[in-house]
Image (cartoon, rainbow, N blue to C red; front, side):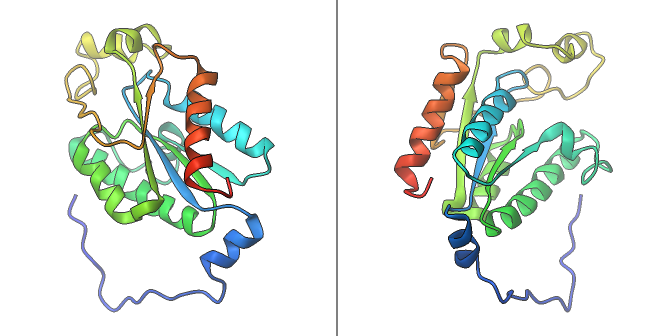
Length: 201
């Protein structure tokens, strides 16, 4: 998908700054980007983290891959070009959420290192990459939608882990091993990182 930069458009700063919004919320806007194979536990851990942060009085929002495709990205398919555009759009939306002072959690397979680098370049220090690491064999046992089964039967093309590659992060801020540790343990690992990284979380 060829993205043309529109002409005659200027960014307008608002009268209220990000720092002022964060001051009211008492927190730091940040993007927690959960990447990993389908079935690795991205959404499960992210929801657990979001729930605890909410109970602590933090404002959060979770962007889920399937949910986003019901609206914002319903015009996109699953070709390589469309999947790249899917991640690009999510990155731009997440940047706005972070600017609003929200702790934003995003759960997307995002299999290509280039896509994740683009997100890091876009958000800078606000981008926290979380690699949800789980062996393919284990992911296939956690397959309620039978996606892996369909992919192996040739019913789904370009399925990550089967017929399309997944490039594991090499420098993720947080590395979760969801086959070896419980949801609670993985949640604690994320929260401990946030506590050390951002004093207001």
